[in-house]
Amino acid sequence: MPELPEVETVRRTIEPHVVGRRIASVDVRERRLRRPVAPDFAARLLGRRIHGVARRAKYLLLDVDDRAPRGPLDDGPGGRLRWVVHLGMSGRFCVGEPPDLPHVHVVVELDDGGRLWFRDPRRFGAMFLSESEADLGTIGVEPLGDDFDGDLLWRETRRHRRVAIKNLVMDQRVVAGVGNIYANEALFDAGVRPSRRSGRVTRAEAGRIVGAVRAVLARAIASGGSSLLDYRDAEGNRGAFQESFAVYERAGEPCPRCGAALRRSVIGARGTFWCAACQH
Ligand SMILES: [Zn+2]
Image 1 (cartoon, rainbow, N blue to C red):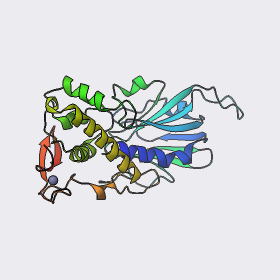
Image 2 (image 1 turned 90 degrees about the vertical axis):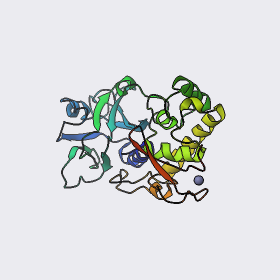
Image 3 (image 1 turned 45 degrees about the horizontal axis):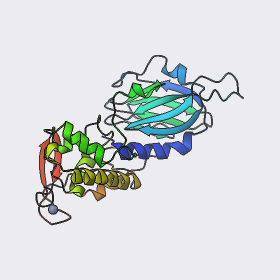
Image 4 (image 1 turned 90 degrees about the horizontal axis):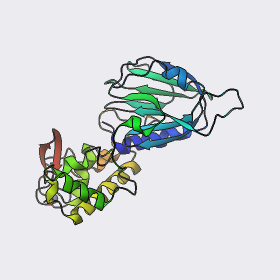
């Protein structure tokens, strides 16, 4: 499933192809996504200009004019509407000619002839227009933003004392966009065992975990994300961070720090990878 680094990589790779372009056609072939595509989605999006591509948690947010233009010289008012895309479990949002494959649900043509397509075999993704972040539901702070710091995580550990620290780091209401891969990697970096109850995490460890989450996400983004299964960026390139995993999916292999065999357990129904010697 794409996590924050993969969505951020899609954002970065899509941005140069779409900013400043106007939407020339919208072809919705399948509405039945996790959140169904609204019947008026195509008509509302048509004709608007894309001003930028942002990201919040694992949502891509394409800023568009907040009303369709009234003529060729009308760039629309300053307010913004957002075209929201979520990749779900298996979604791809790409530039270029759509592939001749099933599950291409939406194809958008731009005024320079470029195309954007959304393919999602499992249909856990979403695509909708939004005027308010409230439409995204309750989501926590951005892990790479200034609000995510040791004090915040420490306060959350006091509020959720019995929750395994790994589940707390993955709780999207606390911090948004940290999924299973990067929670495993960050807790290894921080030297904290994933099963540890949050109430037993010290203030210093909370600070180390925050630093590790930020560092792991930044390294993953610099590598173009992790390509497990079918993830690709918006230009069809694989990420490379899967080659840098310290612990994820490496049970039985030697710990990169101490050489002991890495372990696998299950926490919150998710595969969990850790070193019994390095993580306490
Ligand atoms: Zn170790």
